[in-house]
Image 1 (cartoon, rainbow, N blue to C red):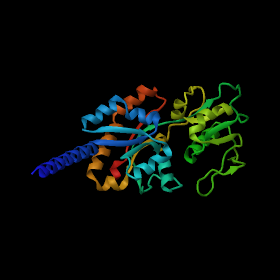
Image 2: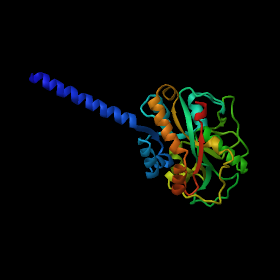
Image 3: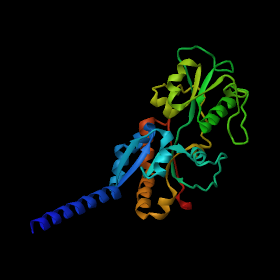
Image 4: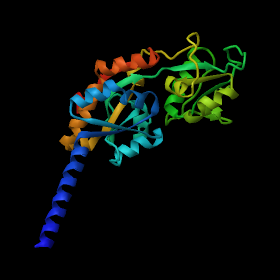
Length: 284
């Protein structure tokens, strides 16, 4: 009798524990993100409150951007927020960006914001902004092309070349036609500015590295802002086959394309990072 009672209590505790655990899983959205501005936006009181009203708690983990897609694919996180569609397609193996691309592993749920590239000056050097100046740009292929496009549009390089796979053609380790440009890993851009005259950095990289924005220096055009917009990305198969998962992602996506998030971005970054709400779910 005593043994039966103990077994019953233990079983009851296990059921209760499982119920609580499932409840947490069902009502908690786990998102991997970069720190600035992504995690800052997700952790804002306004976004958290908006999701709470929908019955969800948002758990945000700052993760190295090179790991985030695999982490969502493996099911460690429900979604991530750090990239634009061109990078996501590159990660999936599509070297030529296409609006009609059919995503296989992860898909862009909604576009949230744009981070225009800007030219930043090494304030310790008094060098004119011309073809004689030296520049650093991000080595990530999609961001590198954006940076080279900006430099070319400003007549700061002669040009650059891409091979048949869409990769930048290098000559002595530098872009062919742009020998005054050095490719640097994104995590080293802020520190690397001290060794060149100018850098072409995403705004979030500059903010993270406490680099001041000079409004007089050239900035990337936002005419194609949706193309460059950072997106919430989620699993293709889970979204299609798991209603609980779909409900989570839809709740978060609804908040991220709402005025709640636009207001947070404006409040935190004063227009330097631009809200770009676009909903891609109509095709899903």
